[in-house]
Image 1 (cartoon, rainbow over the protein chains, first blue to last red):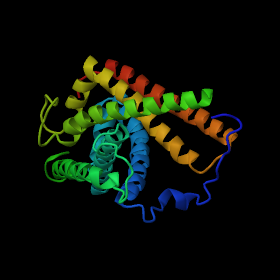
Image 2: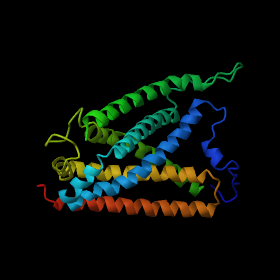
Image 3: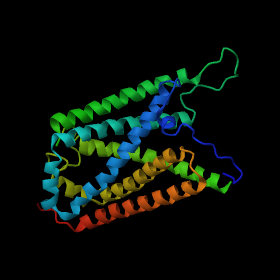
Image 4: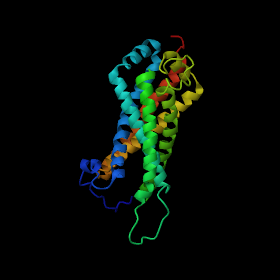
Length: 147
Length: 128
């Protein structure tokens, strides 16, 4: 960015972050993608410190893991699985679209114009199905089989 | 122009780190969060978080390497994403530079803490 380039104000501020207006479902997925990303990042930072408790041996590790079996932490973990599954699969969708996949071939802009949104929508549906599958498997394991 | 080039570089690494995190975290999910369904890399059986399973993975060179790569990729991807969200507030150049330096310092500190633990755990005895 050159020094002469004009900086534009985000006049909507935080509303600009969170508001999707009439831009369609993809715009709202973009907001959820970011919220999930920030949530997973906060969890990940805490997870680094939690995982590091290994260095103190089983005397510390086992009691802490016992505390983690509390339903509050289980629900928290479920939210992390949901956040991760959504963010990861939506992220793959965004990368594919960025690379020009699943948006259709470029065409002459002849009226009536066609939007690539409809072309790429099946990818969104596939992403949602895979995320749901991952959430169901992770949630089932967490609530009925896992630790 | 130089700033633009480094932004493209930052963004490219962000995408690469995202793909690395996707692959490695997917395996992490299968090992830790689907242990009841799959039970992989848990030689002692039971929960993936039972001490014997945890220390088995921690003493493995393969898992130690994977943990460090995942740590670096996830921190980079996460903090670049956070930086992008903050930049969208239309911040002044000086504030942007401050945020960039701050996320690098926080990221490198967290990475160092994680790497230290991954190496220090090698000396922890498996019995427990």
